Image (tube, rainbow, N blue to C red; front, side, top):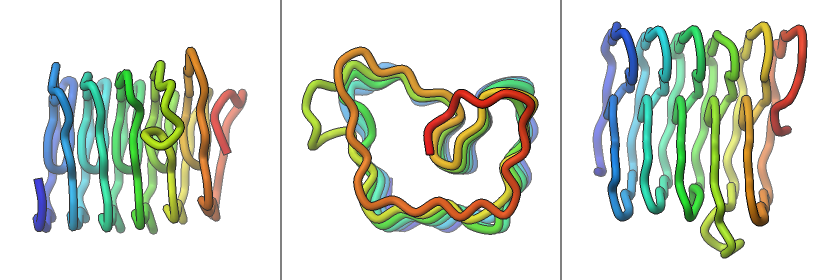
Length: 174
């Protein structure tokens, strides 16, 4: 999926995304040159790009989610609400800025990531930024609200500048 600009309002019970709500059982998906400025609300799984994803691998590059309000009662993220991916997420030159992300397990990049990636080249965040507000009662992170990794994980060259990171308990990443 590439070269898309989205400015919309999405309201859903579950799996709300600015570009894709549900991305399921895919072998590998690539997002490139996306721009999202939207209001996205769901009871569960809200993301600026994808609400919910179960896939072998994901990659995203040169994409931006900005000026968005992303809200869920569980799992809200600047780019992804919830991701289960055996090979993780490869991210390059992405920015989540001037967003307000609200709900339990919220992160500037993803609300929740579960991965068993064993290849450190396929699950890196490289040159990606989160600049914005993340407000949750539990499970918060500038990058991931909650992170579960069963093998190994590497994050390189990321920048987290959150204007407000408010939570009662913390279990996120960065």
